[in-house]
Image (cartoon, rainbow, N blue to C red; front, side):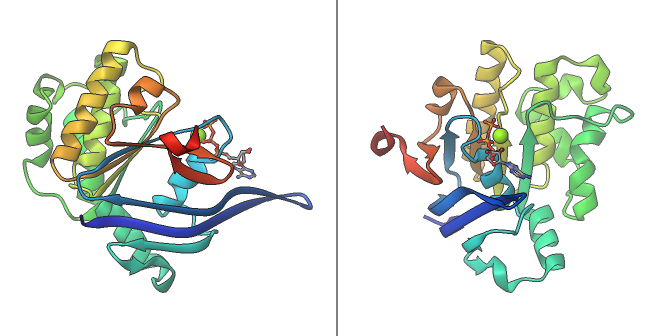
Length: 225
Ligand SMILES: Nc1ncnc2c1ncn2[C@@H]1O[C@H](COP(=O)(O)OP(=O)(O)OP(=O)(O)O)[C@@H](O)[C@H]1O
Ligand SMILES: [Mg+2]
């Protein structure tokens, strides 16, 4: 399978005063095209830290990170920024849409900024995810679940190779969580690699592969038990 991201021997420590807090240690990971992977693990185990590194938002780590087989250490800051904009979509818990723009404008915004936008893509996505009815609405006119789904479509609009979702169902009820998980599955079906962090074991099990974060490592569910 085509590996989108491959990480080996990843280490990450935060410095707090004179102390070093080791969060990630000798961690290996990969995700392939169209794969849906979930990560579970206790609060403070390093999940968001890991997502920031994988999303190219934090480069203060040790180890090797390859995106499409290219070593990131070899790239310039500006090259990394372009790679991030074109290939990685983010959706966070309590994700916010810009209030003064319609849902459709919000969805197309990052794609427009990255110069990768194809006309009609936002509306096509809204249709594909049965959300056409909110295209012209403003964020204050839609529900929390719809906002979260719109934020996800915004992350998908430039057709990223990788979609990173940190607790995408965190503030939603069971029904809306299910809808979001169906959406993520659909995104994976469209070829995007989906990496989701969740505290919800039931949600995690909807993925192709469940990894558990703990002791600085990411291990398959079975062997982590
Ligand atoms: N900027 C920072 N400076 C120092 N320590 C940090 C920083 N960010 C995170 N940490 C520490 O690193 C550890 C991992 O944090 P992280 O946010 O990655 O956890 P998490 O698994 O995402 O937790 P949660 O499930 O609560 O979101 C925690 O002990 C946290 O206190
Ligand atoms: Mg977190």
